[in-house]
Image (tube, rainbow, N blue to C red; front, side, top):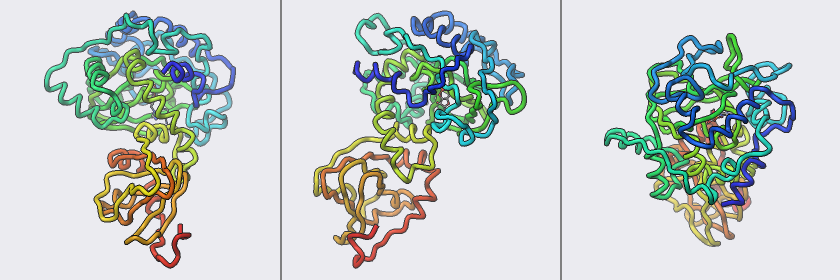
Length: 411
Ligand SMILES: Nc1ncnc2c1ncn2[C@@H]1O[C@@H]2COP(=O)(O)O[C@H]2[C@H]1O
């Protein structure tokens, strides 16, 4: 635990090695020292009043007529950190693919996490360490209706799927309902400090990134739309995980309902497992040819949803004729596909199988049997449908050679 916690900040895959300082981000770093001290400090209370940080809870002070010129109305007022423009010199808006630097290749703005502290408090480096026993999680009572809705909302979220019962209860108690009354409400502004992680119960949100690292004045100031999210989805974890400014702007596209989890509860309960999963699969997923067209952030979301399973040699992972419930990526070892007992295809590291039954709701077209000890990353049906949409066409183009005379070398 300590090992992984301590190594998180040092291995931020999205950090930029550029040493140029942004005054805006420096302010955010300073704020963190205050913010991690108490979830009920000034920042939190101001947020409740709707005038600071990320979207406040219970406040009605939607600041229509956004100060920063983007299409969305800001959900909050003047940030104590400002949303001042970071450098952005010589860069054109052009989507993630158009960004020129190393971090841009990762799908993040040039100055993402630029100002992250080199010296941070023990709490922020190691949120679950001993010495933090004085922390008691926030408790926000909920009606039966709220609890039922909340359980449904988090049931589809992979960051919650590995919690034990106590952790799950702590998180449910700490979540706060946050109605978003209309479209064009800016819940998160790129470049700001992060206070909350959000789960979408209903409604829809678009996500924008400006190459400069923060929202800019004027038309197009939000940058480029990079993705969107809806019921069961979540956002706002990156700033909390990496102690970094918000990497993107998130705006409602309709009336919606969010549940917000404060930064400290997120870091203490959800972060370790989320980090470990993302880090564990990051390098492997980059190597998987099927996923090479995806952006790094899309691969990170897939990592959240994967389960590692080991099989000994000679084990059957998939049985021909069965209904399909999961898709698999082969992480190590070798396996083969058998149709009516005849080998028709071999699998090695980076290959995938199990997609046909999920794509077409058909029974398994072949059995998959291990030839050596094998490690697979399993993606359940929901994750497959939600996360692999962008590569569906690639999967559909895969031609299978079922002619037994060409096996076992057919691939
Ligand atoms: N392509 C993307 N790059 C960065 N963040 C994204 C992207 N798509 C969605 N997001 C979410 O947008 C959020 C903005 O706030 P955070 O940086 O805390 O966390 C970010 C992610 O949860």
